[in-house]
Length: 242
Ligand code: PGA
Image (cartoon, rainbow, N blue to C red; front, side):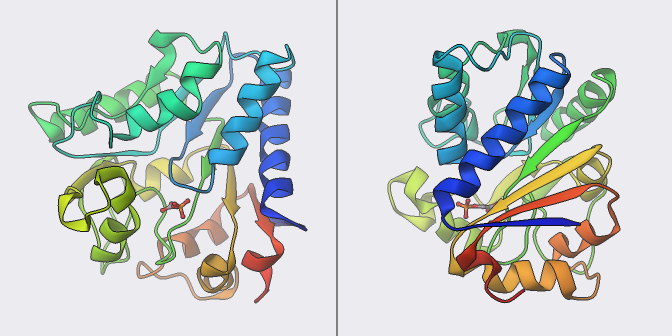
C-alpha cells in the first residue's frame, strides 16, 4: 500500500486530480471507477477546472460509479447520478454513452446489478477505481457485516450511512432510502489500481484499522490490504493514527 499524506484536504484533493489526469494522459481510453460523497467534491472541482483550462481530456474515457440509492430515479435531486452531473460530468467532456451509473429506479434491481457487472466486464474491467471510505469502514455501499457480497448487489444501508447521506434528502435521515445498489467487494478488488481519498479526523480510526487491522468483513476497507496496487491519499487529520 502506498500512503501519501498531505498538509491539507485541498492538497490531497489536488493530488488525486493529478492522479486521474495522469491516468487519462497515459491512457486516454482509461476505465475509471468513481465515488460520491463529500470527500471527492474538491477533486472533481479541480478536474473540471483543469478541463476548462484545456489540460484534461475525458473524451475517450469510460466511467462506472460505485453505487446508487435504490428506489431513487436518476433525475432525483438526491441521486448519485445527479451528484455526478453536478460535480463532474456536467463540467467535462465525457461521452454520455460511456458514463455508467447504476439505475436505482430499474424495475428489476437484481437484473440491474447483473447488467452492471456485464458492462464492467465488457469495458475490459476498471483500470483506476477512486474510492472514499465511510467512517464505519464501508467501501462503496459494502457495509460492515458478517458476510460481504462479491458482485454488484442490493444492500441494506447502515443507519449511520443513512444519517451521513441525509443532506441529499432534505436533511432528514428518515428520507434516505433504506436500500442501495453497490459494486461488490470482488468488483472493487478486481480493479487494477485503487486510489482512496480520505480527509478529516472522522476518518482517522477507520483508516488506521484498514491499514493495520486484521482482515474482517466488519471493516470492508481492511480488504484493501490484499490488493496489489492501492494508493491512499490522506490529509494529516485522517493519517493521525498511522
Ligand atoms: P464522505 O463519504 O466522503 O461523505 O465521507 C465517503 C463514503 O461514505 O464512502
